[in-house]
Image (cartoon, rainbow, N blue to C red):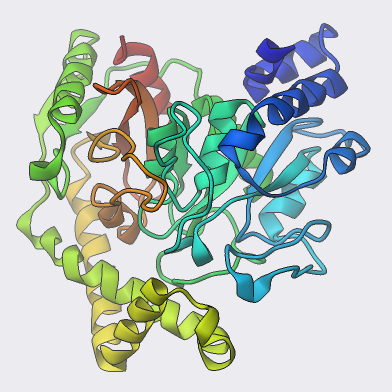
Length: 421
């Protein structure tokens, strides 16, 4: 039944509705895949086989579909430990809002997926399903790896810098970071009030939409419907273009030319120098707000915070309230500037990451190609687009204007259909 585990949720639901597949058999196939590979992948922070097998199936939008839930999102029936020993064994009374809505629509929580410490620093034990010697990326490590390994068709991730897009690219799956605030954050262990965003990861764009619709109550449309016209695409090498590997640069060029051959209009669109300010704004806002959010942990459990994270938090405090206020205001101003700058194009095509997943599990990779888009509060989608010299996945990123999530997702589907080999 291995092949069943790699059906997308959209495909599985179509078979279930047609009567050729039972939801229980699909869940069982995913459980078999977990039994076969979890010992190496280690995607789960908390998992209970019997709990899943005995779950009551609820009718709804994603009825019977397995879901991975990143362990910074609360669940009332599984521990929520936020990747930290400080919260070991913590059992919330309620689900996070996105989890509650997903369950109400029939989703089956397979387990809590591994995150880095408070979704920001020290990595967990999860490995890349394509090569266990390499990181899956972070901080949504277990969610990306679990989707890629066939443990569940989709999962929740969160992003403060690059924690959805980068691991999705490293693991060869689709990652969707919505416009800021689209999926409600109630019940999330929030670190940065101005940056943290809940999103989805899956093996298709349509599945990312399906879970996001179930979690946020919105309607992101049918991404499989033809857009009716060719897109106007801004080619953006990204804020750290000089660091992109040769294979990443070649991939971006190859995808762009295939889209052009399919009718797209290509426009060179490097980021204006003004946006270089994010090199200092993003870390100041991220660490300053995270220090505020972790007041209790710093006051009562500072010794259990990793040295790396504690150093970042104390740096954030040292910058002072005035510097943080100024950085937050500057970020808001640049968000408005970006909206105007995007008016002439449908989306930006830009790298998802520097290159393939780095070797080793003690570092989840650099979010240099992601943080600016998170700070701008815009929708981003990474789609798998090839492999690098070590045979590991590479992705390209589709970036839209804030609030244009439906269009951005539809263009991501267009890229998958017309821009890939």
